Image 1 (spheres, rainbow, N blue to C red):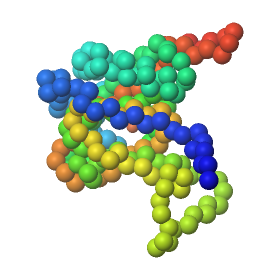
Image 2: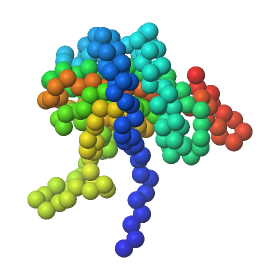
Image 3: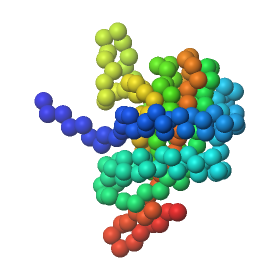
Length: 205
Ligand SMILES: [Fe+2]
């Protein structure tokens, strides 16, 4: 039997992108700037994506993110394009913190930098589909096996400090309740400067 795995979704896990020196700088920034409590989780705090701290965060991370975003963009859009990180912010989750299911609007590539190792309870979870206006049938039994064609969720197998995860911004994802120690991460959104369709282009700034 030939099986064609049609229309797969790329999620890139790039290991050990940031070294200890960079991680310590980012950690200090995150701990001093992530002061805004999440609306749904009182143990999760975010920094502003639009202040001096965000500019510093961008300056530290951009040199290492630049090429991997271009490479991932080539997978998504089939071409080597110029990309801009339009927002970047830090997230500090104490024990009990969680991030509800969401996706990232007005963006093409989103990413996570794991500043601390994510405890197994709080690894990022992706959802195939969230809600639709029709009946749903699913088969789940003692003998059924979850595979890539029927899975509803996917959890990153591990996330060490310094690792980067890239995914298409439309993908729904969440961070389940953190049962470990303080979890620190940085999130960002990137857009291509221009996308072209033969004789016209859409410019994004
Ligand atoms: Fe997110």
